[in-house]
Length: 126
Image (cartoon, rainbow, N blue to C red; front, side, top):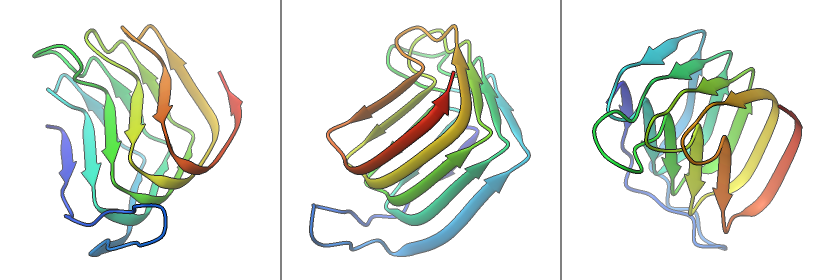
């Protein structure tokens, strides 16, 4: 993986057991990795001015970005494109997600996928 952040916590709709807090990834490019950026079990995770492309090159459903079991995710200025096997960004089992001013194109499945989450705010997405 390009950037992998494991945590072990989770959010189940009422309880947040995240062990890791307040991580920012800013002004980086991540490309040509199995998974571009992965995160699990974090609280207060910020992605700012990041470019991910050509990640997911090993097998199906590997993504440019994959977040699972995170709480309070903020995503702005993200450009995520050309994932040959998955989504630009895939978020599952997470809560309180805010995304704005992001751009996605030419990903195999979807640009931006959020599945079954609480408290999602999205605006100005291309």
